[in-house]
Image (cartoon, rainbow, N blue to C red; front, side):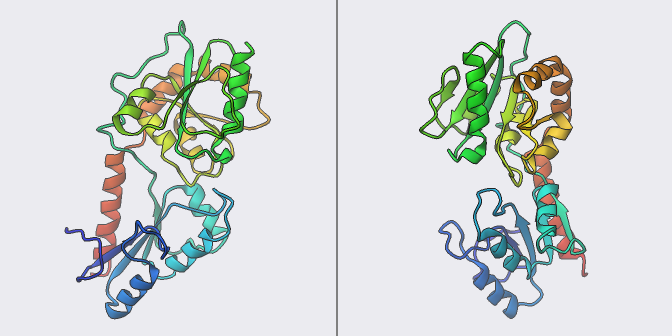
Length: 287
């Protein structure tokens, strides 16, 4: 199998992720793909869908993805939630498709050497975001920060890695600048639980990186595809839940949740293998 990143030569399959024409990070867009398909009708097209308008409250992404999907032979969604989201709008579930959940590089994000809560030190919760968009859950993180600072949530510590809205003035949280790779993984492994209040995520990577470092997951009920991960190795909360009670429950179930995440964590190796199987299936199906 050979991979190229342009349409200047003969290819058997085009793997389409973002069909937008105006992105500098893409070598070609939907117009070029359509033109190539017209010239080479036998080419197969796999469309990976990892975005939606609801995530950022935009008004253009869903339609762009619909236009791209019209020429796809096979579709990969990064979560069940995202598949159902588009099924309510335009996707025909009878079309060939599958769900492949995100995974991170296991050579970097792995649980060996991760901290284990001994019930004597504070339970360290962590979240990390490149974006400072409030929809990443910052109102909830700020609420937890205040509960800890006011002494209403004892035995807990909150770590914030990355960026956050300028208006937030953390009172008790330990903060770190944006990090990635080994630096990020090292910080995550020093914590005990991963918390995200991000809303309507198609899947996301932040909680995946936390899980692969051995951290059970706490996520918002409206977390989109993140909820599918929490159902395997975490807990789901809502705005109506008392955060204090929810976090106290997480303390009581820590060992059970840790065992679950170690047994069910996502994997970049498994994700890659799943994509290879899809490509092989599409290329050989009509033979």
